[in-house]
Image (tube, rainbow, N blue to C red; front, top):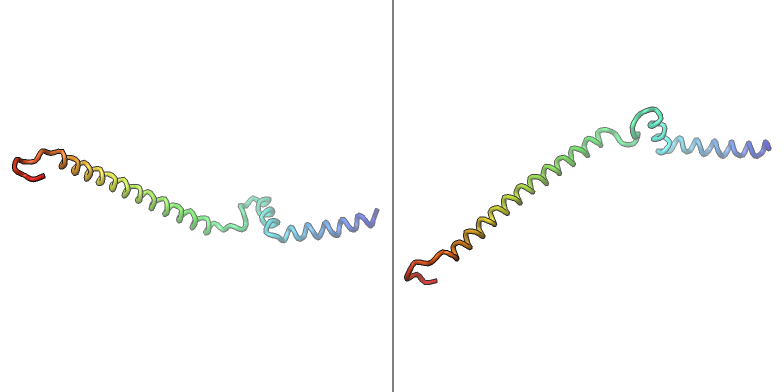
Length: 94
């Protein structure tokens, strides 16, 4: 019985120590202490948020530009259609 207990303590203690020293163990320890994820600094998160906001602003600008281009194309099509429909002056070649 003592042999089994010694084996369990040796291997169990080694496994617990290895887990405590791993990134997973550090993340669990940080979570227990009340902090956030230990491996993601807030600077990196802030940079990622800033980059995503910049991308969203760029996409909104592109959407506005596309909307303006659609309006211009619609206006041009209406002008061309009106020009074809207008009667020509007498004596003008079509």
